[in-house]
Image 1 (cartoon, rainbow, N blue to C red):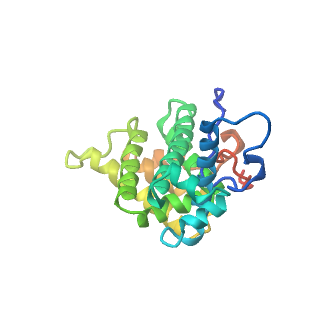
Image 2: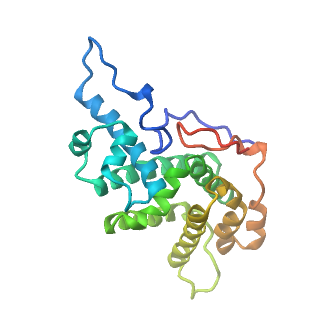
Image 3: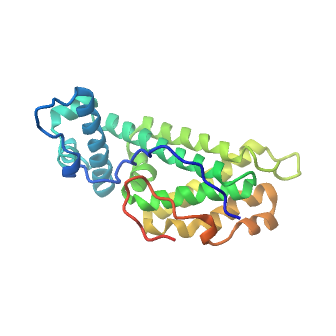
Length: 255
């Protein structure tokens, strides 16, 4: 049975999904003066895209502010009017992008219905397909975050902690009283993250959706057992709806 999806507000683009120098996003000159707030917001978005693409291509350490500005079509003075430096810009782009991905996962989880295995699978599917649709953001957020300093790593750790909410409706876990459920959830989340990160690091990132069956099984089996995990572990089919993609991303050809 296909779940009816409620209308969603206009999505916010994921950093790295668009070229920073896209002429369509340039500030138009004309008789009507564009407000400083609009100019700053446009430059910020373009710098997010430029930063993600440069960091994904060259690595965090080798991506210079000059390169980021060139990729974004934004001047260095404009960059420093918005950010204190490369690390500050990275953190801003990371937080913005993670908020977009998290909201898409929340929507998928909620819209999948009351059955937790199906909801967990829907959230995982969305995560994998969105990351696959913007490989540059996937690499920046899962691999290069390790090189971006202690604040970035703390942000990453906080993100993993927040993902525990997707297990709030899971079963109680193993019957043994010796198993700490919170620790079990953290272990499962850490394993899912490590598997996804490994595929992003070694590629091809576009094939991330192929991990859905094994990740679904790994997420569900510790709480509901192998039989229920096997039931939820199925290939994507038309009843699941179209593939998820990051807002403004190019189609990936996934079903």
